[in-house]
Amino acid sequence: MKRIKALAFTDLHGKMWVSQELAYKAEEENVDVILVCGDITHFGSSQDAKNLLSPLIELRIPVLYVPGNCDPPSLVAVTIDGAECIHGISKFCGDIVFVGVGGSPITPFSTPFELDEETIMKILKTSLQEGIKGYKLAVVSHSPPKDTSLDLTQSGIHGGSLSVKRFVKEK
Image 1 (cartoon, rainbow, N blue to C red):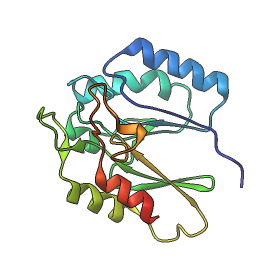
Image 2 (image 1 turned 120 degrees about the horizontal axis):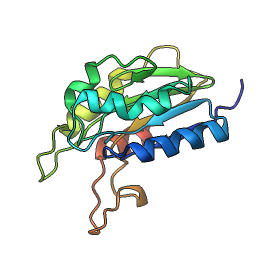
Image 3 (image 1 turned 30 degrees about the horizontal axis):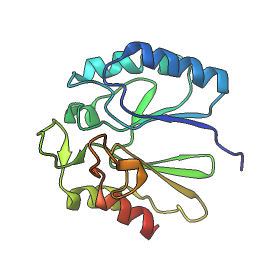
Image 4 (image 1 turned 135 degrees about the horizontal axis):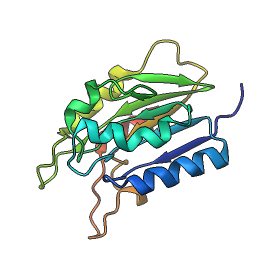
């Protein structure tokens, strides 16, 4: 199977100019898929998310996304032509199966889309489809695995998900 070239990013936080720059980069690099790992908006609406994804969608490259903790939870059920929310589902692309989980573990900040670790694990496990044997697995999540270099915040605490970490280790 053909190797997949992906552009993956997170934390647009409502910045249209960043979305436009990423669209330019995706086109320049001739990517096969664009992976948006949440915080598309900065406490915005589903319509804001649609608008922010539009420069990427215009490229007619598959756009797979999960909402982040600063996005509205309702974004998981919104239809966006040209983009697919993979929160709670898996999506095949070449020799890779992408599984998605949006939101974040519970924070002290009470952001809009937070889930307990048990729910995160349940979403990851139920999103796997039959017939993935022989495919490479890639997790598309807003929360990185806990206690890694990926989840270290500016204040020096690890803000990732234990469930994402366990799921990745199990698979």
